[in-house]
Amino acid sequence: MDKEIYIIRHGETELNKLGIVQGRGINSDLNDTGRSQAAAFYAMYKNVPFEKIYTSKLKRTHQTVQGFIDAGIPWEQVAGLDELAWGKWEGKPNDDNAITAFKAIVTAWDEGDYDAHFEGGESPNQVLARLKEAVDLIKSKKEEKLILICMHGRAMRLLLCLLMNKPLSEMGDFPHQNTTLYKVELTGDKFDIVEFNNTDHLK
Image 1 (tube, rainbow, N blue to C red):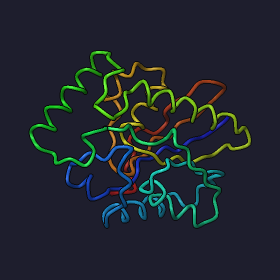
Image 2: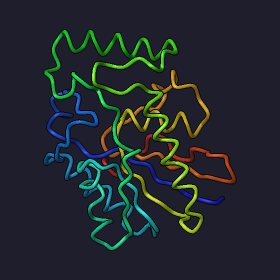
Image 3: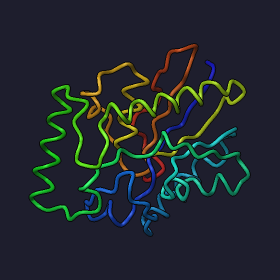
């Protein structure tokens, strides 16, 4: 095994609580629940000797792993780990129009149209391209054997498809709650998931 990688989703924000899409264009803070989730994750995993932390550029990921950052673990922000941009729908009320629009685009993705996107937003293929760059960066740091990544729900699903060589239409196979953990091992060029959607720290 060359690397052990802990991949977590950020903690809850108020927009998460309200069911409103954030995406790459909304830089929201964790709410009280999100801060509690982050604290619970830190309490369970604070003794794991992480050598590096990678987060997106959005502060909800920074805030989720702040305990580890404060403990002095080196930290790098990587834009490739940002959430998919939902364009014109970011921050809009979760009404019938939004629900219909999101069902339609997810159906397009399920049917293999990975270039489908909302106006002003990103397609899965566009996110995949920047995720590949992020993975190449992380793989290139041979000295970093044990790392923690904090990112976002939809981007995490796409990342796991990339790592597992699955078609993007199977992104729905990777469920996620706020601060859920996927633990992945890298040996050579092969990734294996060894912990799947683990939320033990929230129990």
